[in-house]
Length: 145
Image (cartoon, rainbow, N blue to C red):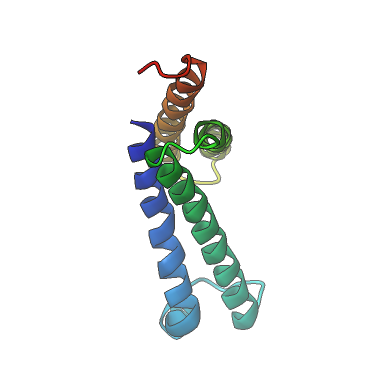
């Protein structure tokens, strides 16, 4: 289960990374007119999009590396997977809390806040289950299946 979840997460992180790069490199002219007035210039916006896209691609690469290492039964894979999944779980819990706080403060629409919080909580549960599964794998004696 853990390797499939991490592989799916690699795709889920990689797609926005690739789209972000495509927009920053070739499609910014189509996107910028649709945005509200921003306090930063178009060049700064482009650099920000590239930075976020590269960050998404790096997170995708980490997920893919751990998933592949789990398939290959590398000795370090389960430990790295626990760390990755636990950190992601904590981050998504924070995202859920932030969404609910924003909704309660009236910063965003309540329905959007609750929907975001539910999505983020579901991701946190998935990552938490992955961390638990990999922790259990680490606890098994050598050779046990």
